[in-house]
Length: 249
Image 1 (cartoon, rainbow, N blue to C red):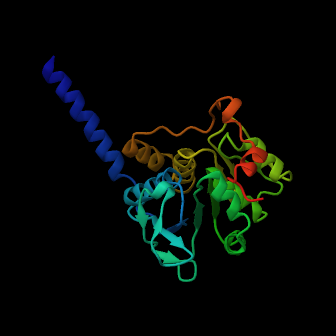
Image 2 (image 1 turned 90 degrees about the vertical axis):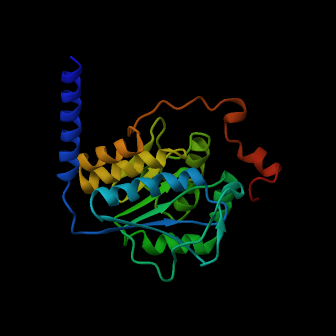
């Protein structure tokens, strides 16, 4: 019986190795640019970076992942957690195929709506990329560029009602991890960037590669998820936050 179990285990391992070896080398490389800025959310950032990096290894180089910022100077992530030096600036980066915008605190993301340099950057590439993706609160400044108009979108459930009020020409979808509108992908809260990125790997590389990435990060992608009730202190209150100085007037 023990020998039988060993044989079965070896067959399973052998099958998995064959499946991994069968993944083709893709000829078209996809450049994945991830925008970073002072205060960027670490969870919003590292999920997509990890997914596309592992997909690049599995596909033998289909994905090239790099960070981009306005300046070459070091930036610090939200809460002073990590210090990062961008790979490129927006002026010298390779042309992206997938452009990812991670979020940060809602106050920071909301203030970035008023930064014309941010808006110009989004508008410059919105029609030049295969996919433009926002994660969590990045929906505020990505939406400000006008790319949400006429589209279904999502964001962190704390901000969903407020986002709808801020961008009435869009339709905010609830109880989802991400929304796919073709060239526009929006992910809800923080770790949902993992789901949205896996979804894109499935689109560009197929289900086999996507499942291999899932296995590598020990995560199961899902699109739909019942959100918690945003009640009491959990509900985003724009007026209250303005009075507290947490949002720009």
